[in-house]
Image: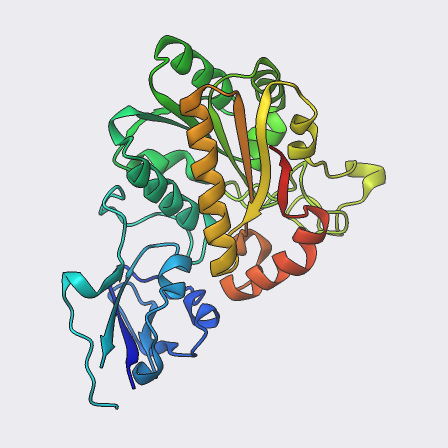
Amino acid sequence: MAKIKGTIIVDIERCKGCGVCVPSCPANVLALSHHVNGKGYNYSYMANPDACIGCASCAIMCPDSVITVYRQKFE
Amino acid sequence: MAELEVQIKEENLVYRKSPLLTDKIMHYCPGCSHGTVHKLVAEVIDELGIQEKTIGVSPVGCSVFAYNYLHIDWSQAAHGRACAVATGIKRTNPDKMVFTYQGDGDLAAIGTAETIHACNRGENIAVIFINNAIYGMTGGQMAPTTLIGMKTATSPYGRDPKIHGFPYKIADIVSQLSGTCYVTRQSVHTPAAVRKTKAAIKKAFENAMAGKGLSFVEVVSTCNSGWKMSPVDANKWMEENLVPFYPLGDIKG
């Protein structure tokens, strides 16, 4: 069966750790990291990367446009 | 299936930052709705292919530095006067797409007269109005749009209509005027709402290009620093408190 899988790339240094991407994800993929970036923000990351469907809801919500989304179909 | 890796290449790309946004990191607080609306403006201008024809007018308020973040021509108006400045720009450059980007302290308080008269004259511009019910830039003071009972720096016991008057819905007021062709109220607190706001901004810009009259897009927004909440809580608070008073949807057009 074909499976659609997605992944995101977070521009860690631009992320302000606001967290609005976390509840916007329908697959509960995202969380805020325990690590911080150069500005001291807990940046967003994929805590559960296998569940990502590449819907781009997180990227649409991100006020600082730090998320890039990719999606691929596996036959 | 866990071993399946999505390849990072152009053909798999779903979403990336708009090329119209500059690389400058926005000065807005984490989670501020301004960033989301800036992004939508950039995406709409990119999709319509009008980067060379667009002139924005930024206000006084947090979004005063909007000109740093979008690769288009900008002008910056005195407090509240963005609609008047945009009128002049549009009348001298009728082939350009002119829009203003204003907050509630700018558009609905000091700039009420300019806004209402630009709407009444039916200037062929688009107005983007960010309504977060507070003066964000100066430290969270009460605005004309602040809800009854809402605590701000200048109404620490909550807004009392006997002392401070009532909040008002400027989008409903301008929808009564003959010069406006499209008046809508949207928000950016969920992915679906962001998509609707983008469609509204696109329609407003198309109307401005077509010379149909003034298009007014109100975006009910959050100011998590001014409201003293986390960005996620602010979105929830907005949905529970602001949205019932400022109902979302098209008001005219």
